[in-house]
Image (cartoon, rainbow, N blue to C red):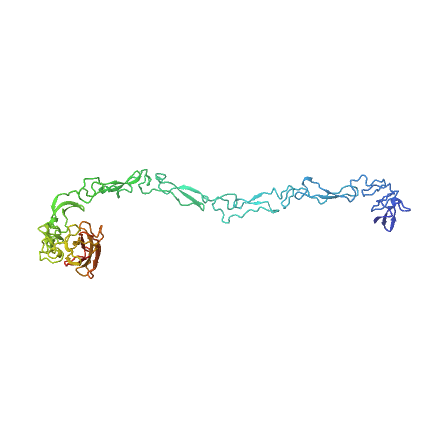
Length: 581
């Protein structure tokens, strides 16, 4: 059956009939339409029919239609048929927590709300992985469950992962009780038939009961294994006594019998006081000195214990004969190597010239001891040379050279105090040595006083060894009546040395017999030249004369060695001089 609006009127189509809102169908009353139909002049339709003006006697149904035509719909109804609403019969505060959810109610034809379908209210918590009591926790309240006896006893969680977990006891030990303090056969009794429990301990002692806990003796311990106590471990029974202040043999005495004593030891003292024996004193071994200090004797020992052996030469100091030769025969008793020995007062030594047997070989002054050295006899010349000789226990200088004819060798061959006499001495000076230094009295060996013309001369001499220098002069006189201005006066000097390799130096200068003239420190600088033995150099100098007077000048000449220690000879040097105006 359908209803719809057509031209402003509700039209109900059912079984090929058309009903209008003007009232019931022609020839029918409201009751002919059906028990659930309504009548009246309203335009409201229902699924069960259309009422009309003659519907007032119908009972109002809760169907959203004015069944009794009183123009009030569903009066007296809580709801209209088919209406729905949320519902919950439990504690509304728990809705939405855990498993708690709302249901749905549907309104029946009588206007009453039906049962609350589909709701889940709070329940007692079960092991199902859900929050049954809607308190925000899942499977709470399930704890542990214990079942079984002894080792079979087990404890399980009642609920695991939302599934109930049953508690099943374990299996008993197939070997029965093992005396381990547990109920292995799960019969409620522990270690029945066992003497002790495994691992249980008790005191024990294997020695004599008279020594138990006496001195160092003490109990040990036994441990239970397989229900019986094992061997006694760790008990201390009597031991041999040692020096430790303890009762090792457990007889109530300490260190009796000097245990460990009697052996030799060193006290730390010196000498014979070092030896000792061990004694047990106050629980420790001490080294007790055996010998006491005594006076020192010659035995190689430190008798007085002062750290020195045989000091003070005990038993020594007496004169004795060693039985040896020479100076070694006289001896003195001496403590040596622990015995008194006669040792030489004087030890053997190299022979000296003293008329004694110094080397103790039975011979005196053999081998000329101390001799052979050069010495001076005190005589002149070569006679002064001597050699030391040991004679009658003293060293004497014995002359080694005798006087001989003098030769030119720088020696005093005839031992008269002069060397090379007859060979030295300046020939042009009467074999007398020219002076070694300049003075106003040097020898004059020539003169010049002729005008015009040239005057010449030659001078001969010898240079003695070790620094001889020969000075001489030539006097030159000018005519005082000469009215013309005086010409200078000239001098030329030539020196010739005695031979090749002998370097002789000649120095020349003019002086007035009072003016110093020398190579060194000269106010008048001399002119010098050197002959090497193969050359004869020439020196030329001039002197100014005063007009109208008689002038006298001196040509001072010096001959000297170039090297004093080398340039000397027994042969003559030669100086040639020439003076002219």
